[in-house]
Length: 394
Image (cartoon, rainbow, N blue to C red; front, side, top):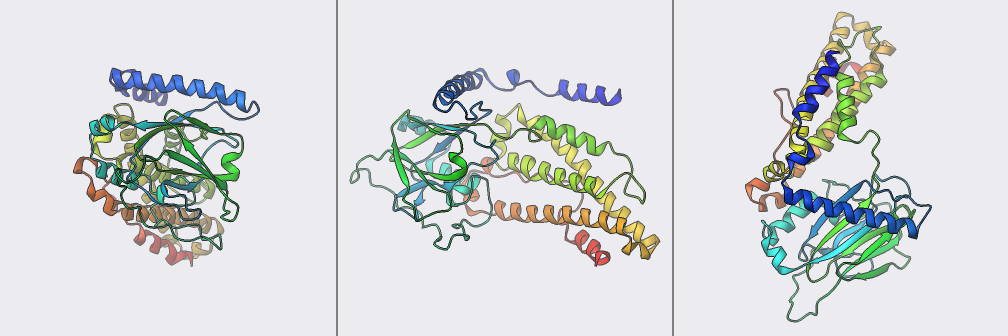
C-alpha cells in the first residue's frame, strides 16, 4: 500500500505534457503528429508487409557549413556520415521529410551558425563517423573491419555563393560495409520525402550530403520501446531498490541480479542523465516535461550509488571474516558480477570525461555547454574499488 501511495504521489508531482510546454510548442508538435500519421499511411501503401507504426519523430537542423568530405565515392560535402539507424524494430520503415531553411529562419535562431555547427558536432559525433547513428565519444574513423576503409577526410572549405550555383541536399545509399559496389545519390527538393522500406536500413547504409542552404528534417521510425521508456526504467529502479539487505551468503541475491542492477545503474547514468544534461541549461529549462522526470532519475541514481558501495563493502566483509571465502564459488561469482558492472561504468565515465573536454563545446555560450551531472558525495573514480575487488578475485 505504501508503494502504491508513493507511486501516486510521484505521478501527481510530475507535470503533465499539456502544462509543461507553451501553446506554440504544443501546436507545432500537433502538426508533427499529423505529418507522422500521413507518412505512416503512405508507408503502409508502399510496403504493406513492413513495420510503419512509427513511435519516434526526430527533428534535425543542419547548417550547410558543418560538413566533411565524403571519403569513398567523391560525393562532395557530407553533413551526416555513412550509418545505419540504430535501436529500431527489425524491418522498421524510415521516413524522412527534408525542408530547406530560409535565411530569415536561420537568422532568427538563438545561436549563430558557428555555434550551431559546434553544437551539432558535439551532440552528434556520428556525423563524422562511419558505423552507426549513436553518439560515440571516440575519435571518428572509418570502420577498421573493411580492408579498404580509410579515415574520414578533413572538413570542407566554405562555399563561395557567388562562384558556385546553389546545390540541393542529397541522400546517399550504399551496401553496408562495402565500398566497392557503386553507391546511389538522390537529390532532394524542398519538401521531398523519402522512405527506406522494410529491411533497407539493415542491409544498407545511408548518408546526408549538404546543399547550399541550411536544412530542417524530420525522421519517422519505430524504435524499440520494451524496457527502454522512462516509465519502464522507473519501475525497474523501484524494483531493484526495494530488495532489502546487502549481499550475504545464502541470500536470494544472485550474480544475475547484480549484473542487472549494474546494467540499470549504468543506463540511468549514461543513457539518460548525462545525455539530458549534456545539452546545457537552456535545453533543460526549455523542457518542463522532461526536466523533473530526469531529476527523479537522479535521486534514484543516488540510491543506486549507495547500494553499489554497500555491496562492495559487504563482499569485503565476507572475505575479511574468513579469507578462505576467496575461493568460495558463490562469493567469487558475486564478486565478479560487481567487478564487471563497475568496470563498465568506469569505462563509460572515462568516455564522458573525454567528451566534456571536446573543443567544440567551448565554442558555445556557457548556457549551452554541458552540465556535468549526475553528481553525488561518493567517489566518481571507481579505480580504487576495482583494484580492491581484483585483489581477492585473483
